[in-house]
Image 1 (cartoon, one colour):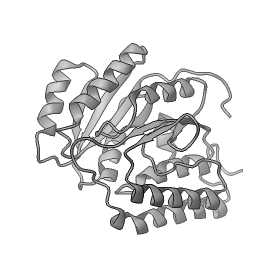
Image 2: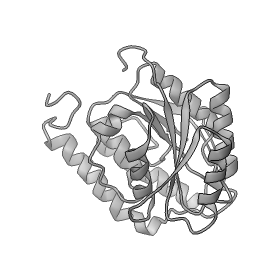
Image 3: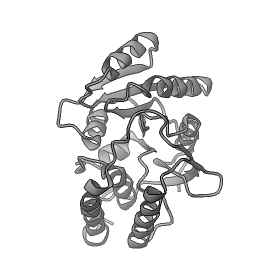
Length: 254
């Protein structure tokens, strides 16, 4: 539980983008409009991940139009994890929320996250699978695998949360710094961050969130490439939880 209400400060909306020219404009406009309307100080940081289409040029044009927008090119290897990690090296906010470029995440939920951080929580996690949430156009095969994977993580870590694998989460800056070094190069970063935050003793809360299937472009997530990478991160976090004797916990060993 949070100790007291406190400012969440400047919010960075971090969007990793690889060839998202077809989706990035409506995504950014929707996010900026919602946050402006909620009077939330923010920047929208697009981590450009080795784009070969017009995404980089589109983001540059948006940055000229909207003061809150900026792009930064991922100089390292390509991949979702590398792109997010680059963004986490250069973001300016006091808190950060990771949002997908394809408009699958509801911008109104970013406001909900921010309000939870203002209550004093270190992290705000969304769940697409609790009362009040909505999920549309989720491929059934991915949905089945999602529920199996999340049920396994819940069992192993003895936690009530049921949507670890969704990237759409918010963290205060001290959480990001406290979770370093980040190990994941790919989509397994989506579980590394919340698992480390929980194991290391940061406060968190869960709110219902909405998810809408991609309408443009192609998903970069490949199930066949992620299985062993997820297992690696889960095992790493389990070892830390049960065998590190609290050496990595917030505030030091318990």
